[in-house]
Amino acid sequence: MIKTLDNGIRITARRIPHYNSVAVGVWVKTGSTCETPEENGISHLIEHMLFKGTQNRTAKQIAVDMDRIGGQINAFTSKECTCYHARVVPDKTDVALDVLADLFRNSVLDENELEKEKGVVLEEIAMVNDDIEELTHEKISELFFTGTTLSKPILGTAENIKRFTRDDLISYIERHYYPANVVISAAGGFDEERLLDSIEERFGDYARGGKKEKSECDSPFSPEPRRLFIAKEAEQTHLCLAFPGCTFADDERFSLSVLNNILGGGMSSRLFQSIREEKGLAYSVYSYPSIYSFAGMFSLYAGTTAVNADNVVSLMKKELDRLKKERISEADFIQGKDQLRGNYVLSMEGSNALMSAMGKSLLLLDEIYDEEETIKKIESVSLDRVNALIDRIFEYPKMSAVFAGNIEKRSEIEKELEGFNGQA
Image (cartoon, rainbow, N blue to C red; front, side, top):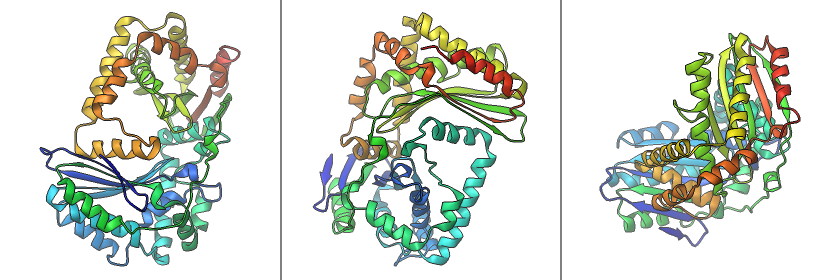
């Protein structure tokens, strides 16, 4: 079900009578991709601040009102969206909507609380910088998407966080938290008429200014080969190789997911078997797609003792060369596709998963695929489509690479990287 309120807020809801929970999310189409370099980090800071007190509730009262009904409330910021969400038993849906509407509409953005929360976010930034695996993933995104808004970190920079004022937050909210930029999604055992009435009552008169602002990522993106080495005190080298991927609207993202399963998406995958099981060179090794509205990235990751870093790069290239030369067999294709179907079905169990899938899809694609439609898209993936995707994705001249931690074998790593130069 999709409905639009008179003010432009869109609602999507799916009732599942046998569910003993209801998940509700308020989505805003803004994240780090919507920020200027000077604003980088403000979307995430706003997400934190909306929980720090409203005209009707203190920060503690927000927590108490959810705890007393056994509910859960949280939020997250991504590169393209921000979501405030709650999960409750069905007869407490009104309470969840009331709390979400209150923090969304009536947050006071207290200046004293802002200064404290800046400290919290600065600690979060420091935590990422100390977690070398997470830092590697952050930096490969920054490097690969250089020149686009996707390169900006969600947490922002420490310099920006320290500088932001209450007026900066208010200005950003006014420009981005307008009704047509908002989606409310719900899934679970709710009463549909009561849910819609409750949303209308709490959000129907919501009004802000704002207009769609064109993102730099709306433009074509042309990746270039880039390398980054980050020296940190550690025993391991953490490495990421990145290639062009698929966009959220590209149905080939399903083919890419099958390819990912075969290459590095599980314990039976080629990277896992080759680098961990056969050679014992890594505990953590995998591949993953990063899918966005206007660009995509496909990455290979491993964490390995520094003396083995060049060998791991060599083994990764060996598996990619094998893919490009031999293609994928019918047996591997069937397994990868069955794995994708099973993973998808299991991932959609529960009200939170359904709420998230519907909300994000409507926000970014302006349409919703239900489980049956998505499974049909998975079923439509063919071996020829997956094999055709190999050359499209693994264009060596467009590969970026990040190495972080102990980089004592940098010269040997760079020699291995030369093997990617000049090859299509």
